[in-house]
Length: 317
Image (cartoon, rainbow, N blue to C red; front, side):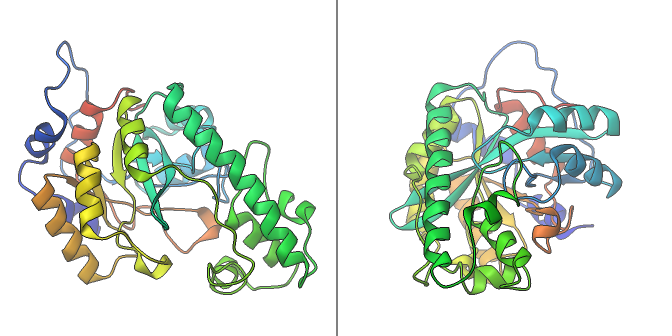
C-alpha cells in the first residue's frame, strides 16, 4: 500500500475535527460517494495548463492507467484544464477532483495552497489568481532578460515551451534552458541558473496566505497546505503560521510528499493532530518535468469523503 494511504488514516475521526473548524455543514440531500478502503487517491497533479508536460486529458488517462481510482488536477493559479480533464475522466472511468494550486506568501516565504472543489467563477479568488498569473508573465520576462545577458536565451525560446493559456513560470524557463543546451534538465536549471540565490531570480506577486485561505473558503473550496515541510525548496513557514492558517479556515495538510523528510512528516502529523486538520498524501505529478510518479503517495478514502462533503463542486465520476 502506498505510504500516504496508511499514514493519512492515523488521525482519529478527521470529519469530526474538521467540523470544529468550519462550523455546521449544509443541510439537505447529499449525494456524495462512499470510498471503500483500498481506493487509490492522488490529489495533486499538474498539466500543460501550468507547469506539467502532459495535457490535462493525458494526466487523467495516465492516472487511470497507473491504477488510480481518483485523481485531482491542481494546476497553478488556473482552472483552464478542468474541462478536458473532466471529459477524459468520464471516458477513462476514473473520478476527478477539480482543484488548483494557489500561489501565496507569508512574509518573504512562498506558500502553495491546494484548493479543492471551489467555484471557479468566485470574484475574489478569481481576481487574486488572475493577478498572480499576469505578474508571473511579467516576472518571467524580467528573468529571461537577466539570464539573456549571460546566456543566449530569448522570450521566444520560453514561449516555445508553452501552450496557449499556460500559466507561465520558472519551469518553462527551465525547459527553454534545457532546449537551448544550457542545462541538462529542469532540476539542474533550478539548482543553478534559476535558484533564488542567483542574480537572475525575480519574485512575483502572490496574496498573503491568510487572505488566500479566506478566499478559497469564500469560493466554497477546501484549502490544504501543499508540501508545507519541503525545506529543500527554500524556507518554510514556522508552526505558528500554520496555526494562523487554521484559524483563517485551513482544513488540511499535505503531509505525505516526496519532498518531506521523515522528520518533517512526523512534525506535520503532530501539527495536524493538534489543530484538527486532516492529512493528505499526493504525488505532485508534473509528467516528465519532475521525477514524481502518479500514486507514489495517496490520501485516505475517508479524507476524500470529507473534502467532497465540504466542497462546493461535485467530484466527477
